[in-house]
Length: 157
Ligand code: RB5
Image (cartoon, rainbow, N blue to C red; front, side, top):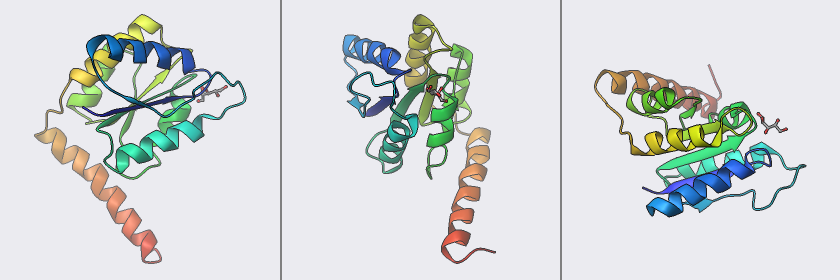
């Protein structure tokens, strides 16, 4: 699985812990930054990079971390083809894969303890989409997005 990861200054420390976890299990990843702790950096700069790389198909999954995960989830969900789930519990992580087929996980560095976040990451990366009725539901979201984009391209209705 190809994984992209990114964080702002508040998510920086958790990003480094997730990288260590991936190193320990032999999971490769690409780090889109931040590469150093800069209190002036802005989460959209990293969020769009990761989300667009996932949307282009260069990565199967993305993980984004800011203070609460809210900013990153808003940013990434603006990108066509991306389904971002902000998860604060292992249960949410599992369901965001089995039911929602989320291809980006958003985490809050200020709101989720590191050990809980690593368990969320473990479950989220190990869990597959269930398909079936969930495929029908997810398709409705993607169909809506595709339809709206087409309307925009042709001047709107
Ligand atoms: C940065 O102070 C903070 O606003 C950001 O990390 C994030 O929590 C936004 O949602």
